[in-house]
Image 1: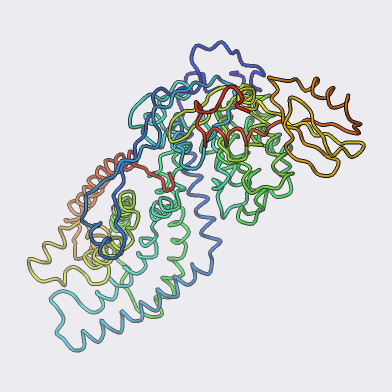
Image 2: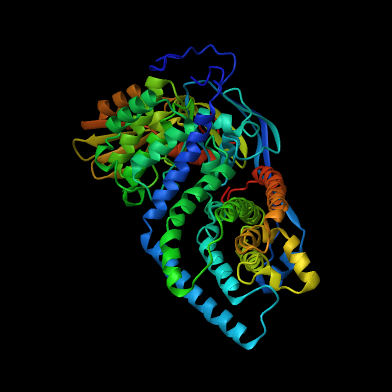
Length: 275
Length: 351
């Protein structure tokens, strides 16, 4: 039947495998229930420590202009809740697949592997996202946080989605390094630490002094955590939304383009171990 | 073919284009030279010394649709490199490669729809999921129409007896069960070409035979083309009429298994059970290979004496209770080609 001229496939048929991948990833993650609960547990511990550190810092020092303790705690709590989904890295599988050589069998399938990793990641994310509500409820026992207006929440949600996409493309690029050097784990870990710090996950970027602040806010890492969080706490006012979101979108487009080029190059040099 | 029901039982052998074609196919791997020791490791970090390793050197072959060909060679001969180029995941250094009319590395995804792969050493089923869910996923990946999927799956469940472990997670399956699952997975989308890489490795005799029977049946009934890479030459003897031998990246033989046997398997062994002891046993035209009690093994060249003539000579002189003739195994023939080279192997028996 393959002799026939290839029938044009509808959008639904083209997307079907990726929807299936996401569904499978969702149910696969669900089988690791213990790990999921551990994540929430560790989140609550981290949240408690954050609160203790920030409270102590604020008790000893004068508060920086315009940033109250309450605001920092809100910021930190939302950042931790965001990390529940942003720390899921569907593209990590690239590294394992290259090391184990299973990438070869995947490439023998009529699918786009980057999209496969994306949909697999979405499936995992969706499962972990179901934890946000219970995690939020439990967090409220530790800290009290602000809830902004629906308009701000909507902007935050949009910014969060863009941040998710930027995060995916960054992870994808990092994991693609494994195509060139099979051991990319150390590089990966370093970039993760740097991006956590410069992305404003641990410390709000507005605490960085002067020029440094301008620099870190302009770096792509800020598009992942910092932008949605600054929208949430109101540091970025509604008049700044358009620009902030456009910058995030811009990073996503830039990294996607790089990703496509890198992927093409990677595919050309797939050398499976034991080949 | 377009009605989605069954495929033609017999395919016309008159296609102008072979389903698989390679011409002067060549692949050179460039690897970083690694030095031993700690100092060496550090030097390797900064070194740009590369070494070229030729994996496949000018392989040309053509396969007709519906053939079942054994692709044989010792470890490191270039078999898997060739297969990877045919599946489109490795770009040749030079030469031409075409599978079902497509250049695999240029059209990886389209090519993937035409092919199926089974690796004995590496499953492509989803480890954490029940077997049947892997099949469901493949249905979505290849966009197999529901009716076709049902028909194929039911057929494979039946033929491969997969009913009882369909809902078991793949990681809990035995090797035999997993291989059956892998075969079904490779064929659900009706590929025209299937690559089998060591498909019976580690299996017991019964499971091996079940797999071989399945391959033979699919080849016969669906006209699927198979390329079988294996070290178990019993697979080849059982399944393939044609064999392609590769060594050090170069083709050394491409032709019928029988022809290979005719050319190299010139010697047979006649095993004779004697009725009474004959200490001075001797027959002209054959060499006494071994003797254990009243069992005598005679090695003869079938071009200088026919089996019939030899048997008559033996029977004229001695009392015989039983006779049998042993053919040389394909394995010993191929071992001889590996060690002596194809051309060096004599066409006239030197004995």
